[in-house]
Length: 355
Image (tube, rainbow, N blue to C red; front, side):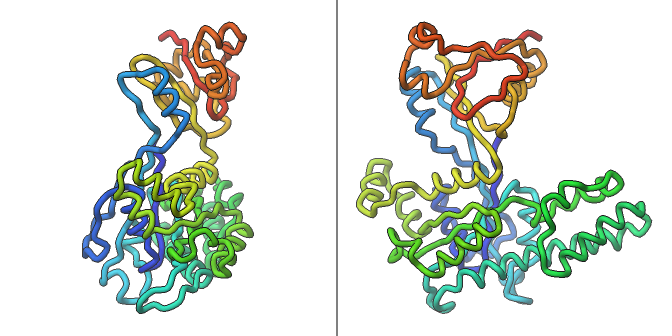
């Protein structure tokens, strides 16, 4: 499973710079292209690195994240100075949105207005979704009464400038489901607030009034929040790994922007990681929290879920304390778990199955 994240923000927020830094891909922020920037990036995980170093497999496979960035063109912004239908439409297939907000001075936009910019971005998402809902009502005048009632309530909430409650969106009545499934509302997607700060704020980001206002807004709205300096991340991405580590130490940067983003994304989407190890491959797998052993086995291969018998399980922490299977067995740390077992973050699994 590859997590899909859309990096979104108002023009000049630095989102395309951040995309290039996170993905280490060259980009042209001014390119008048109709195509989105797409990249698949391995998820950094020191646990997998250590497991691989110990087992020395033929192959090491990290979990991955797909990033989507769409540069706004003149045609997109000329009417209202916003993002436009084409740009917003590209984000309807992602699982979560990273809302990048400018927290640095700009040569012609002037001083940052973080909270005002975030509220403007939220309004654009709302207006875009309102248009989708209204079009759905207009195109389907003969939809069942219960479906129309639900859509009209959703329309009314959006017209009032409010986000619909998660419970309302989750409880789509059966008659409305065929019409709702194709909408992919942006406001229904989990989102993360990213404050893109200037180099001068590094180390004291959370003391800045604008950044503090963003953090307070995110907290009040139940969103994950993190800060990043996209320009510095861009410089780090151009360095060799050892040079990058030294550069980060000099600037007292404890976590890369990618690590912060992954942590926030996994928290927002309630995801976790389990591992499989062996001579052929050591691999990290991403599943939702609460996944059972058979469901997790299905991430590896559908046959493993269908023919699941039991799972041999021990934890990454067990491995750190006792790095050989002989020690794991001797300490009684290798468990046999059945179909009801709920996999935990950091579990190392070996699936027994029969098809």
